[in-house]
Amino acid sequence: MHVGFIGLGMMGLPMAENLARAPGIALVAFDRASRGRNVVSETKLAQFMIPGTFAGGFALKLQAKHLCIVASMLEGTQLDAPEVALCAGLWREASAVLGRPAG
View 1 (cartoon, rainbow, N blue to C red):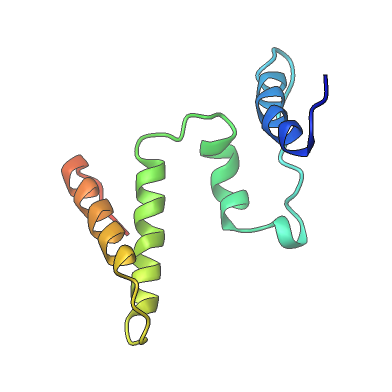
View 2: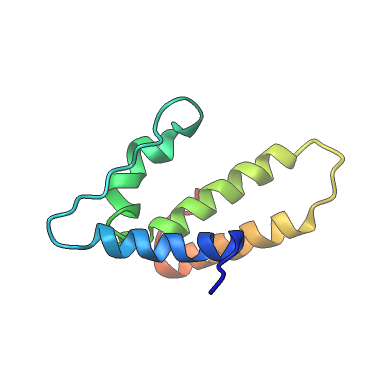
C-alpha cells in the first residue's frame, strides 16, 4: 500500500491523539519557541486544546473575538468584505443566545 504526502498528514493527527491519550503518556507541546510561540500556545493550549475539551464556549468566544478584531480593522478602509460583517453578526447573535459575550 502507498500512502502519499497528504495521506500521511491525514493519518498523523489521529495517530498522535491516540498515542497522547494512552495511559501513562503525557502530550507535550514542543513548538513554543520563536515562530511557534504565541498567546494561544502560552495560555490556551494546555488548558483547553490538548485535553480536547474546549471547555464551555471556548471556540465560540475565541472566534467571536477574532471576528470583532477583523471587523474593527476593516473600519476606515476601502475594502469591501461583507462576509466579515455577516460572520461577526452571526457569532455575536450566537453569543447572545448562549449568554456569552462576543469579543
